[in-house]
Structures are given as structure tokens and as C-alpha cells.
Length: 145
Image 1: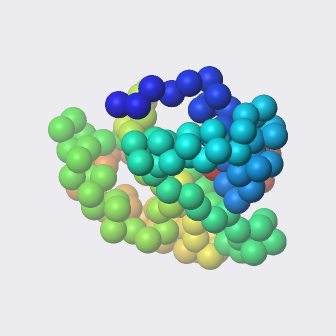
Image 2: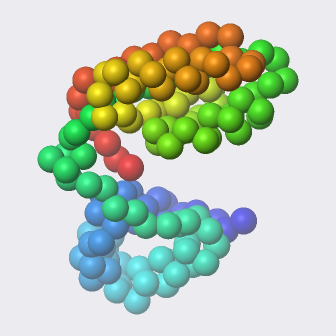
């Protein structure tokens, strides 16, 4: 496992804001040379600390549809099977195991409230799910992905 320094954490934080920022601008913000930042990036990429860079669509393009957080209570010892079956739903953007009264949390996106209702009904048919709660996302105040 690679050792992460405070400067590495600062670099990663800057990349989270804009992963396309030029290395020279990153170097200026970090108070490091361009070569040092390039070397850090290469080390973080090769070690797997930085697994990928991604694209985030503008809010205008990504506005259509409805997003929600769906929480699932699952029968003991069925979580792996339930997660595998849930992964078949293309509307699920992320799926997480969590602690607390629920076992799994999914962020979902559907084109309409009717589609959201159908999705929840379909997911509720999966054997092993004992309870589902859904919260519709009204707006996003902060997104650092």
C-alpha cells in the first residue's frame, strides 16, 4: 500500500474539484514544482489510489428525471444475494452497505415519479428484502464527486 502524504491529500482534494485542471495550476496551488506534481499523480495512479477520472454532467443536462435514496432492510445472510439482484437494475447509480436499521442504500434515477414507483415495486419483489424506504432528492446542495 502506498503512503499518502498531506500534499497527496491536498492534490486529491483539488482533483475532486476539477480533475482536468492543468498540472501547472495544481503545482501553483500546492506550492510544488510541476514535475513533483506529475510524479505524485503517476505514483497515485500506478498504485491504484487514483482509480479513474470521470465526467460530471452540468446540472442543466442532468436535471431530467427524479433521483432518490432507497434504503433496504435485508434478511440475515442474504445481503450478498440481494445486492447481486439489485445490481441488475440500471436505474441504480450507486449501492452501499451501511450500518444502522437498514443494510443497503441505493441512489436511483428514473425519468418520472411513475417509473420510480414501478422501480420500488420491482425491487420489493426481491427475496430477502424485508423493508424499503425511499426519499426523493429535491435538490443537491453539495456534490464533491
